Length: 174
Image (cartoon, rainbow, N blue to C red):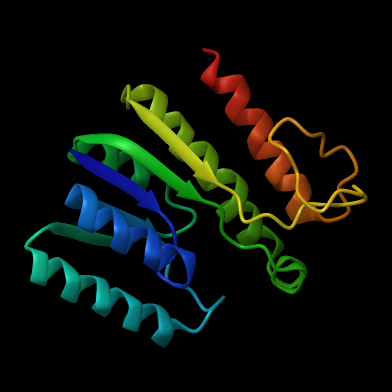
């Protein structure tokens, strides 16, 4: 059983990969090592995961994908026998969005759609996606319920999260 995890090996991603590796034993982690967060920090986290992998004799592979490479994602899905996908949303900082609009869109929208497409093409059992929530907008409640509306988004990030949610719900029906 291989689990594909699309998450950066920084904060949440490190612990997701570490725990899944310890529980399931075979993790394929894809992401783009870029300068959005300190590259050396990500590399240190990857080294820690590699050390854990060696200690418990499990399988962990990190594949550095490029945000514009749909064919790279297709190849990964063709070569690996995946049973589950976990996708963690990526770039959530407004400053990065303004300075790198197309990169943001590729990371948060295009790559997400490419992974959803491969999920359907390859008949994978489970697709889990986690959104780093900063999408409260003008909602008065501090904690959002899964069925609560996000109609009053006040950032591009929250709008992209909303779009990913709508695309996922639509595709899951088919």
